[in-house]
Image 1: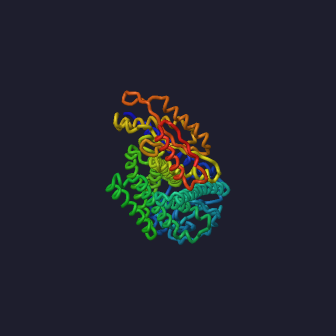
Image 2: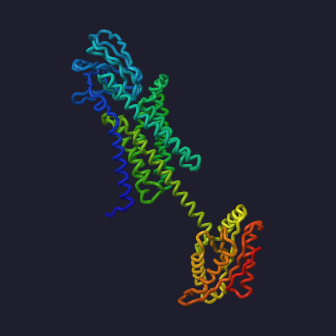
Length: 548
């Protein structure tokens, strides 16, 4: 099996980006303090109401019930007493309320303990000042959404530093998203490309999702938002997925290649996703499960649909393919955790945020590359409208445009330019004797010789039939006469081979100056044409020059 060079490059790019992605994830603060906090202890935890438990060796993690229900956990600190632990830290997303109570005896009413909240709220860790005299405590947690929960005892100074590092990472990610979004907005307002209309909502929603998803908004002390935080976050996540799906379909034109499949496999699930984002405002557990499943579905289904487009060489598809591969890895990790399949890890915590940043950068490159490709195509098409198809010289439209520029420049700078009309003598006989194909070859050969005889700044074009127009910017008439004499000699001295026969061709030239007395370039061309007529009527193979 032979792998094409382009396919090899694409897969190499994918491996490099995936490697970089996991390197960034690895640099993030770990979920269980293994790097940032050296001294920590996990208290013995026991659920004291009917809840789901996930147990591992030397560790207990739990899953809250959600739906605004209270869950209670009995924590025992005996094996942690030898360390100087000042805080009890609860690792939990989207909590509604947390209370601490004394254990008491079975049947006794538990009394509430007021533990001081440490004023360093984080993305996922809630810290409280620990009473050193306590050896047991009951934690009562109420959550709107079912979520993993873990408990730690830590040193306050180390925790603050760890927390600070995590916030710095999220601040960098959020700033990067906003920068990319603003940059792409400027490109959109400048280019007017409709693809950006679908891409920009995705960018800004992603930035907001990063700001909300891990509770970073708590640093602004938005207590009012805590009531809506989880539900609104997932509505924004669903909206982000919707616009990402819309952009991918529009950018890659998937609906043109697979119309029915795109409708039922992508468009309908994307609308379901955003619909359940709204439902999450009222019933977050149902909405959350559907949003995660739809996100996973859209990511998985889109990926194989992109692969055939690599062979079709759709604009910038390689950037989209690599970007979607990264986000697919992250979404699989996040959804598998949310559904209870996998444990909390850096890939789960930071994966979607970091992958979204990679995706945004790559999709921005894709859009930029597409704009460049379209610009090149437009330039090529425009150049075709200005080029004579047979001789590949400037056509009449281009000559008039360039001539107008030279005329205005000469008038502005009060300088003299020159203009010449060149006609192939007895060209009709070539067509009559050898045919029109031979005549075309003569035109092409004469065009090449004229081009080689002129200076770089001179403008040459086919005026029509066997006539050529030469514009010589900032060239006095006497200098232009020398250039025309060189052309006359070049044509006379070299024979032309047509249909295996040698032809001796000559040209007649009418030359004039472009002066400030002319009203427009057409007057100069008309004067050169009259000079050409005199050259042909008085014997051909000569230059007739007129000044005005």
